[in-house]
Length: 193
Image 1 (spheres, rainbow, N blue to C red):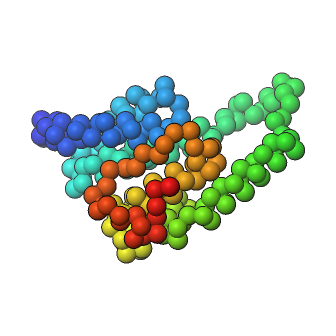
Image 2: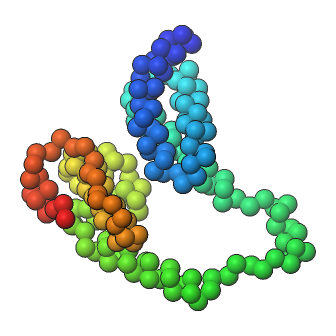
Image 3: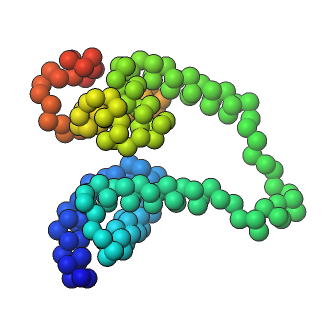
């Protein structure tokens, strides 16, 4: 059994390493952790495959990576009780939200809301379903009645526009590779401005 899982892993999982690394670099801000995240993702996929092979290896790989990132984020937010018991004796000032930081946050939120409002109706719907309601790509595409590739394109363009509005565009946008025909953006109310 182990030999067949090894062969499955090499043929079905390892070919996606470049895409996995791109995903991890996008999703995780601490670059020093990227290699560890990749290895832990591989370990989880392999251990699960020992019990039963997933039907869709690539989807399973990326879902595992996403779940690992969520686990790490949750773990990072937990503060040990041991550390909190002695806070008063440390005489550490609590980092309260200063009026400047509050104003800056409010301005960023306003900028983000304006950018979201300028998106096409479909891009707003895609972002809402994926990021706010937490639907999978397949579920969101089914709900909107579009192909997953089109959903991914709307998602990418919408997030890119919002990031540009919030951070300021520093480089020309690169579009993800899609199989859509030229001029398809105009059909959906999108342009490459």
